[in-house]
Image (cartoon, rainbow, N blue to C red; front, side):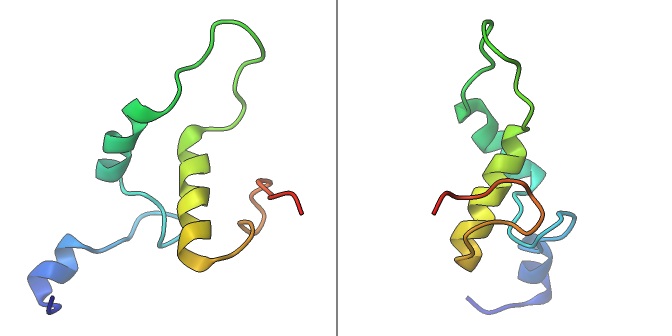
Length: 75
């Protein structure tokens, strides 16, 4: 695929904290597939979009964890 001005605008990844962050349109497709909040137990303190963006960051960069995110993988 050749990068023309039209395709550059279409696939531009701006607005997120990282280039690998999901766009709003991508999140709209993924959000319904995420587990619903449970009625019992402790309420969620982490937003699922942040978790999804972290997974995309790790898959894109090969990094073990996002710097300063608090989401760390166990050794």
